Image (tube, rainbow, N blue to C red; front, side, top):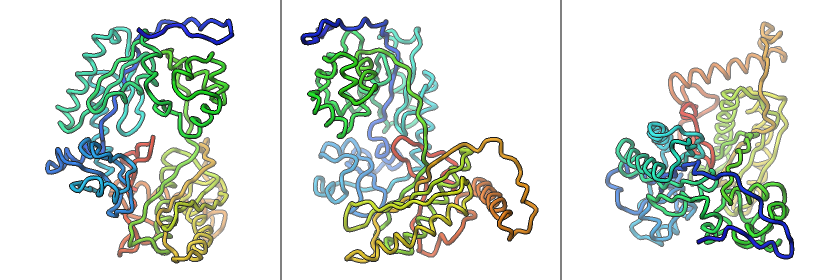
Length: 443
């Protein structure tokens, strides 16, 4: 069937002996998720080519494409204008991120009815670890079918999922991508790694263009060539120990997951065509900064650096500038940093040939550290205008605003103008690898 031993060239090293590699992971990947939710909510869209876009402009890109749209070669990242050329009947519908989070919660709850969810990997992907009484191939297949049927019956009949089952999480994810939509693929230990040889290197999570080029420079152009190396040689080609780790994962060894650390908090916003001038951009940047500050406090952290970044309308180059912060979680200190950077962005935008026209603006706060052992300030009872008291009172005000907005809804209170047509709606957005909490839709 598939080879179980490997040639090591002129070397005499034998392949390492593997531990038992039972089916241990089940990975659920919803198909065309955002578009499928829209088809569930809007029956008129069912069975039709649909793309979900962040704003109502042909210059933006699709953030999701329905199964029907994908048949025309349209996918995530396709410009709206191009999608309209590829399919004359394409329907463009605006993104509704709160609905996607609401459906996500329902999907996770449905999967939990059948098997515990070990990790939520993204808005449309979850990984489940199988116990010894669940990982017989027949039982695992039946479990996957029950999950798929449960999602259709109890969450929405427009929602289909592809499921992968394998000895480790990486391979289960790969298996879920092998047949779409509505697929079910099982990768057994005895089939590995040969069954992966038809997949491109980029199919492996973590291999992008940069690492693909590095591997090619070392003579590795496909998965078969990577697996033919000794583990330590694969690690050297990768550029570190991760290649060694990847080699074992591709052979079905279930290695512990490496912990991830989130060192930044950021929000960005693609401006609508009518709101790309300086004042709307400035107000949008301030609004994004407030969202970052609110998330920072909710995590119980403070930050030491703020980065303002933007893209101009006439090219794809990035503009960015940073401002050091005094280890703060205070909205007003973060807004002050935005105000200090704004003249530099204003000058850079105004100097361009077409004048100030901004396509995207974003705010990122970094140098994040937990607030540990916080004690009441010694300066809280000083005169409100005393510099020592101001930060303490501002932080208390920031936290009070968080509580009011959580209780009474988004923008019940805010800093600066939000209405009168001066600013785009800046709601919570689902970023790659991060699902906003429902609290963020109240910020």
